[in-house]
Image (tube, rainbow, N blue to C red; front, side, top):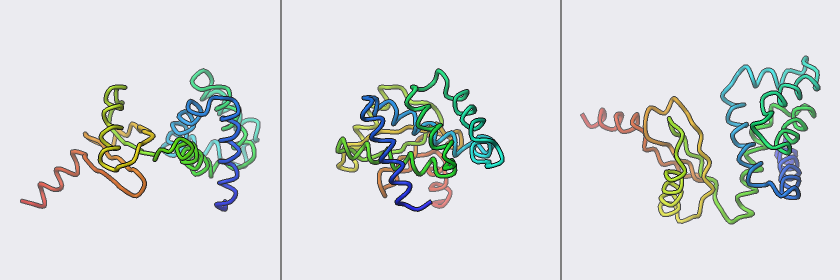
Length: 175
């Protein structure tokens, strides 16, 4: 889909969530859904298969999100899936997250970690990233089992790789 269409969807979703007064919560839920969508071939195939009727795809969204997300989040994802734009869902959501962050004068910081981070760890990490980049950040944590230990943080074009794998590779190259 063209960038203009992606931005159009993102702007519409942003405005709906803002008007409902649930922007922060919806933004976080949509971000987590997009990462799940990207990491699961079965989910991606089920929600983008044009041979599956739109109402069935929307039913899958409803059963997945059910009690785990706000009604606004479920309706927004269902709308995108129902309109046949499922393949573009991660891009649309990433654009919405960036738009929401800009509206708060924040930069999106995507952090990949092998384990979930506590609230205290997230607060300290956000402060450290703000200090390292010179920008206040909207921290988005993705639990990624392929990260053996440590974290990978991406803020704009800056990547900070503090994973065990990278450190081992650095040690190996020194030896």
